[in-house]
Structure formats: structure tokens, C-alpha cells
Length: 225
Image (cartoon, rainbow, N blue to C red; front, side, top):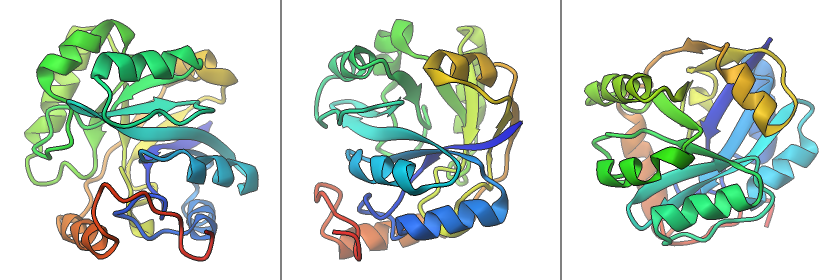
């Protein structure tokens, strides 16, 4: 069985400071042996971490579409930000990736609008029904799980870690798999691990983003540029 973290950020996201080396060390420390790296509008860090980690890494990207964020998993090419949700999922599917919807119905402005989620529903592979950072208005997680069950969608839990201390707090324990379709089959047999992050993590991330010039800035990792 794999202990998987399916939504996390590194210093290639403007609101995180976690170096790739530190992410690897923290995963080994807490027992995460399958990691989806999903930096904001950037795939580069995920590809680098895949090449250096001694455990399984799924290259991903949290893409800011015109109506909210959509994650692509098993990517080989970056998907541009600002496209419509339909075009975003088409770019993900066009390279054999999986469409993962993070924190739907969240109070955060980055959440995908409900109308947009309905519009891309036939292309959605996984819905995140527990996000550890939905720690202020927790009803969003319950609403996401109800929605996913009603539509027969595969579900996941994740930490959405921006700090090292968040890695592995939540996630899934799932059988080993091979490739995107094997991942989906395995995820249907997974057990979700749910633990909320402390509320103060939001203030830390906002401060970090402001320090680095805002969400629109495309960072390269300090010490790794």
C-alpha cells in the first residue's frame, strides 16, 4: 500500500517556500511514498522533483482557469493559465493526464465555480472531497463529498500542503498502481486520511505570496534557479 499526498506545493508556487530537497526529506520523515506535486501554473518543479525523489512522484499542475482552479495529474507539458475550464481540461486530457478538481465549493476565491464544475463534469476524473485547508468553513468538504457521491465520481483527500509541516497530514492510503488508469482503479480502493491544518496557515501563505510579488509572478525556486 502507498501513503499518497495528491495535492501539494513547493517553492515553485508563489505562496510556498518548501525547497524540493526539503519536500523529499519531509515525505521520508512522515512516510509519504507517493506524492503529486501540483504547483500553481507551473510544472517545472514537479518534473525536477520526480527525477530526484527516491519514491513515486506524479507530475501535476494546479491551473488557474478563467473560472477557478483545476489540477492536471500525470502531465508532461505545462497547461497555460487563463483558459476556459473546458479548454483547460481538453489540454490535460490531450496529453493523457487526469482531471482532478481541488477544493470545490471552497470559500476561497480560487475554487472552481459550481457552474463550471457542472460544465466539465463528463471530463472529471477525481474530486477532492477533503481538503485540509478548508479549515474555516468546513461545510465545503461535506458539500464536495455529497456532490461526488451523487455523480458517481472517484474521490480523494489531500493536505494542499504549502508548508512542510502540512505534508501528509491528510491524504489517501491506496494500492500500488501503474499509470493514470491504474491510479484511478487504485484510488477507488483507497482509504482517506482526514486531518485539518491549523487556521494560521492561510495567513502564512498570503504573506509569502505578497513577499514574492503576488500570485501572477512565476517564481523559480530560491537556491535552484
